[in-house]
Image (cartoon, rainbow, N blue to C red; front, side, top):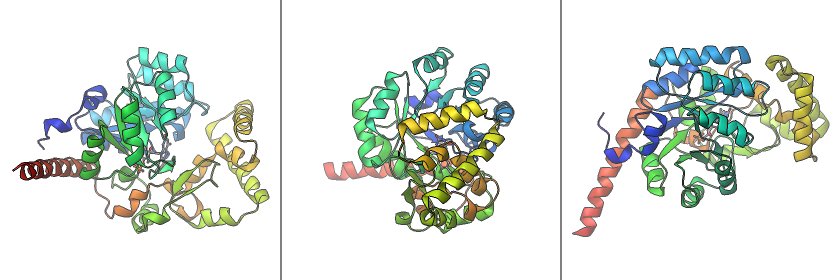
Length: 362
Ligand SMILES: Cc1cc2nc3c(=O)[nH]c(=O)nc-3n(C[C@H](O)[C@H](O)[C@H](O)COP(=O)(O)O)c2cc1C
């Protein structure tokens, strides 16, 4: 496919990909198969390192390399996960092109990654967090508007992108609510150098998400109903409503605490987290939000609920993180079809706009 040179931005050179399209990390979803499918289609994929078992991360990295003929890709991590430093070592050892993260890594950690030539590209949902992340050393930034899936802020993409583009000097990538070529062109008109998408890539034939769960995503036709809830882990998280969320809404604080403790213990066992590490996470959470013990405990184990929907095929018993954009997606195409379609539509829209300018000028 021939791409307009204007749609190839410096971000493509920074990340070593053909198109300015990023597949973001999604717990239990963005494994080696999805990352390889994105990469082979000309996009840039991030492995979701926070939910891959510690001993499997390296195998996943090697698998992406094998499936893509050693093309560049990235790794997502959270500083609170027990194997965070192991992931950082692997990113350096395997010369990954980029890492993505939320808040957490300090200047020393980021400096080490930057020294190894790794692009440090956090995702933020507010201007002040973008500025803080850049002060810490980030050399590109993904801004996620409130319409995005998973943990998300309250500022919509149309406000957040120009606000951050005007305030920072590093390349900005737009996330939250993107799924087609019109969105890519609009993001670039705002000054972003590309788009990053989660929900769009989850809803592909390459995501590996069980059919029964994907059906829930395809059935979500009303963007208004893909709402934010604080009940899962105390932080605003956008998801498709289901039986589990209704149960949480009705549950007493005591029941929520009981559920949270149960999930925390299961997560601790699954990740090999030590008691001391769990206590540190709990202590940190309590210091940040002493008002809700249940939510603090839950912060460490929300991934367990995502796993039920994304790998166990139990969408009614877990959490289905999703951007509002799921309501606009009604087919499960391959990553290749999705990316090629976005690029073709962006070029088409660009040409149409150019014609419109000529018509206005005459
Ligand atoms: C199912 C799901 C799981 C997610 N898990 C993670 C994660 O593990 N780490 C992370 O940084 N972001 C995570 N996110 C957020 C996405 O990486 C991305 O920022 C967001 O989906 C962008 O908005 P969009 O869905 O409108 O494209 C998740 C999102 C979804 C939908």
